Length: 399
Image (tube, rainbow, N blue to C red):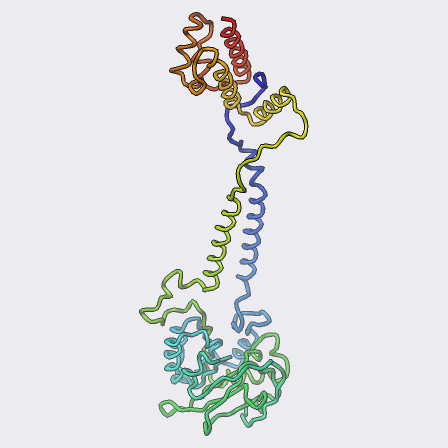
């Protein structure tokens, strides 16, 4: 082992070794980033969301929006409650696509704005919004969307005929004035509530499902006719798309300004579970299965083979410093008993070197540099060090 042809003096991995280890993870990360950018680019073109009048997707509503514009109806798209309330007024139809997303405070603000419009169409309104936006109306269990007949005298429904409706069903208080159409198991999926505001006739339309507004269903049955009559009866249409990010009308003590409050609860629980799993994995990986057990080798291994194998490992790792340290440590351990120095003091220069100088007052090599010197700078220096250590040990034994 003392004459092994080793490399450099450091066990730190080279840049090439580091790249070999991390290139797999880097490739996966690059693919994920590339896929994410490509998906974001595709989705940022024409795709918006369900019931978005700008979207040409199957569940978008660009087709009905274009038909309304062709009939002379001006359309204003509102993505916040402030924009929706500011755009409503006389001669206006207010369409609210998902009223259940609004908070109670936002619903109260919207209900006040509904009095300013001539018609309000609430799509898919359920228990969360009916109490505020349509008092006296309750929601029944939803029903599948399928072809349904009007079964009422509402002119818009009778002209449209059969349409694709379902979703929410509605019940009104006994004696309430309302037009109930497209019934499912006796309960309507379209309900018109007449009213007045400042002497002006207003009405609220509850639409159980949004399917008649989808691009993919607009050309089927009387869907287009009903959609155009409900939304195009006034010269101006305000198309309001509520979202969870609309917090302009949240109360002052609302916590939605807090970053953690913006994260859905499911993500918080998921992160907690992942952290717990990481802790358990660390405990599992770090556990000890008891003390080390010495086992006999299955075959006899010659000392020279073990020495050569270890030297090859040092050479492969370019660890000249480690090889030199092993050589010096072994030499000091063997010299200490010969010099009368306790084994526990064999690696102390203050104890070993004086005893060596007393035994060998005249020596060609510097004992301190040989036994405690720096790491060799190259392979030739390492080989020379091994020869000098052997010579020093022989000199001590023969003295």
